[in-house]
Image (cartoon, rainbow, N blue to C red):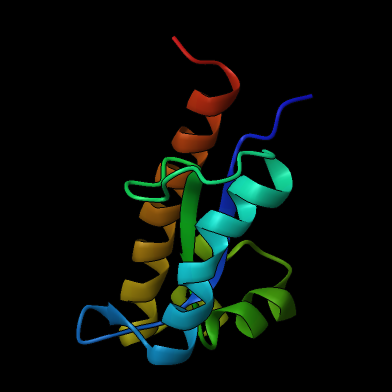
Length: 110
């Protein structure tokens, strides 16, 4: 079995940059992944190709989706996804689709 990469969870951005606490931990992951998982010591982490996705913090969409037993990207106005939540649902659909494609390309490269 070969590792396909890692996913950075609950990545929060402010002013198009990760917030300080997440940036601190997120910047440590590439080297730790290379050292501990891939056993590649001293390898460069510039342009890290091992990061499959950066899951944004979905805020209140997660409990909303849990309550109605649906994926985040299938929430509707009937479920309470109104106003800015409806845009977040559309963004989630786009994000999950791009993540699925990235994972699929790692599993079955052309």
